[in-house]
Image (cartoon, rainbow, N blue to C red; front, side, top):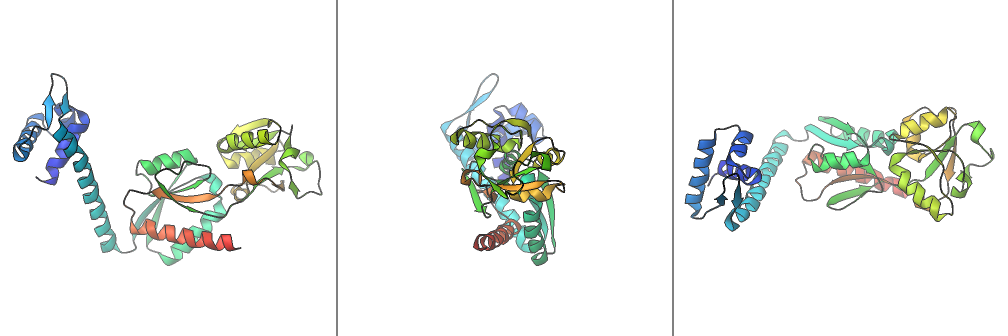
Length: 296
């Protein structure tokens, strides 16, 4: 039994049709049918029950399908690992990152990593946390940089330091110029501009504090929050590190004294998938920088 036989069988098992599997494999149907029969003869068992429109796996077929997936994934992982060794610390690292991670935070970590591994190139995909996690699950990126809260099931995580949310506003919205910090309750009835990613968190936290937030504008990027607040349209609520993402020369910044609104940036990866040497070294670098942040 060769690896190509497992690839053929897996395509058949997933498509449940010889014709569809042959099309996916870009080969003719008769040779694929012949390969399946040869595999059944070699193993001495029936792997599929053939029906008029589709086929169904036998008990032996189900076992082989599961094993074939494991064997092929291990083969691919072994190939990648050997290539890592052959190339050394070179190649391309694919990272997915959210805008609200804060340009400064990523700049520091990437700059440090680049100093140590100058031969590494980067491919960056940007989106919100849910998009980045989807790219991670699809194998399009190897490491995700996301912000809490998110579902940690099946993920390995390394967290940066916790940071507060801040309220940003122009002078006309500043009800107390002498204050550098505010309580959440002080935002009651004020026009709030929020990144939609934090809508539920902010809403639930405000309700716990006895009021329903007045969402004047909900958007899909922390930079939009900064822009609208900078135009004097309302009071923006963003994570502190996101201040570096856009123009804020007109903005007054007040830290919101509310522990429930603290969030953390995290580097995440899939626990049960092969991780390249590049990704492993990046995670190590991210973890060291995060430990230093937590000690400050």
